[in-house]
Length: 598
Image (tube, rainbow, N blue to C red; front, top):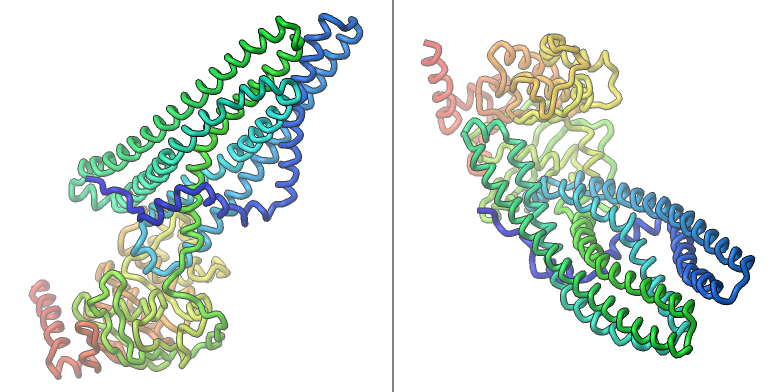
């Protein structure tokens, strides 16, 4: 069963305020020139629209009192006004739509710029699919509002006020009667408008959850199919999508009811006023042209009122979308760069120090992933981290990359606390080969060049050769230019890993982090890659996380982790001789491998 979107009371309260649209102001005001021209075009078209009834009055009264020549002039004036109205409307559309597209492009870039720098801790609290929904669905809604609805709203406000003024100038008596209906129109707008706002926010929440569910399932489509969960996934996505539809249906019904009530009340009032106006014409209290002019202004005002009630709902939806985007724009990360950073050591020697480090993952605050770790890794030293799953090995790498900050203690690079440097600065000294190789939907060349964007094709090929990736890349349809597909769908697990290793080799950083780097390789490829890693590790500080102990036997030092602590340290032979956890792990692995070989 689909869960209800998570929206706290504060979110609900703030979503009732159209003032949330003020969050767009910094983006709109960057283009004051374009905004000013849009306002000029808007005022111009509204003014021309209000001139048309005057021309119509002249024409109508001209049939009775004017000469043919004067009548021709009235018609010509009406045509000129119509031409100006068409020109002004087209100009307004161009300017406002262009402004909307420009603002939305800036918002999308600003949101992406902010979320791409968020640490992994941030994404433990929000689904990636929901972030994508906000960047796409919510910004599309805002584009529609800025490029259309706001302009249309302001235009109708001007027409309403201008029409009211001209009605007063034409007949104060009839205008007074028209104004009697205004309270009857405003009350349902206020009463039903609040409900529309709440439903709009809820609808956007369901859409975001739908996008998140689809993204999560499609990214794991092989696992879904392997376990036969297609029907379950269809039902779950269908439930969320249906909830989004039901929410949208309620919102549409409420807006439709609001529109019906407002339009009926407005036009019912106009019909009543017309009846009184017709009697005044019969009594020679006003001319037919004046009545026609009044009727047109009344229709303009009525249409503006109806449009305002319609647009108000759009603005409310945009307010909810703006809130959600502002949440991403103003989101603060638990990991922050210092205000006055210290430059990273250049060139870095690669000395790594963990000084009394304790760390708890945000989702597991009562369980220490690292519990008082003290260790120093000398420049150029190769250190292997081994131990049971969940012992804290990968956490060491994550803290060294500053994906998280320690709950207590310090992590230092060449004697400088990582928190004293910018992340981008010190990370230039680190190359990572993760357990799950990340492959982008790009060519083999660009996937390897991701390690160092300014590398030449020759350097890319040399890195691929060193990682034992050159041969299989050349077997691809277009060699190094071959597209690898989304998440490397064109490659096997071992091939993905070799691409990731080539990327790290190309980076040529003084600190190398290998997180189960050879776990997906066959025996022949593992030997080739291990030789490349051995060459790469020379004169570099290398940390190797591995469960397969055969890959760490040559390490200068092996650190054994258990329950977040370093429980033993030494060489392979020395640790085996000591007994303890490492000896048990070695016995299980090497005995099992021997039995399997037999």
